[in-house]
Length: 130
Image 1 (spheres, rainbow, N blue to C red):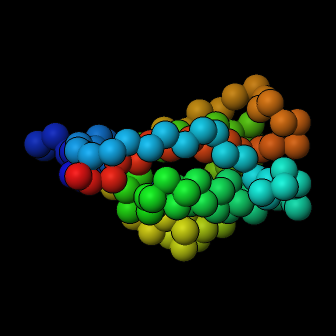
Image 2: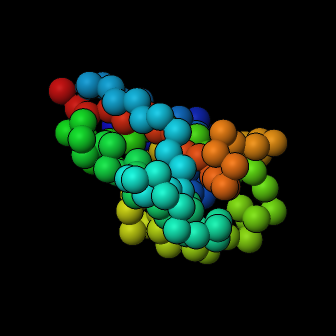
């Protein structure tokens, strides 16, 4: 996997502008902040984000992948301000569960998610090298 940084661009903080990778692709559907039994344990944004990241890692493991194989991540959030306020907790969870930032990332505020109690949904693409 190689993070892509056009010549003369400043390195972004917390993500990559692009990623090049070769290997077996794994596509993780949108993961939200409930557990394996589809039960929410909190309405705290940071804790829901932690659980969603944990769910991403579990799905990757089921496919023989690890967080280091993530090439793309998209965050869908229901409240931009709540997301920004939770950045310290999100950053801590990200460092503990994912641990690298060479990931092409996007974050989008949406009107709602399919599960009413969900505040964040994260989808991922990973590439396991050949």
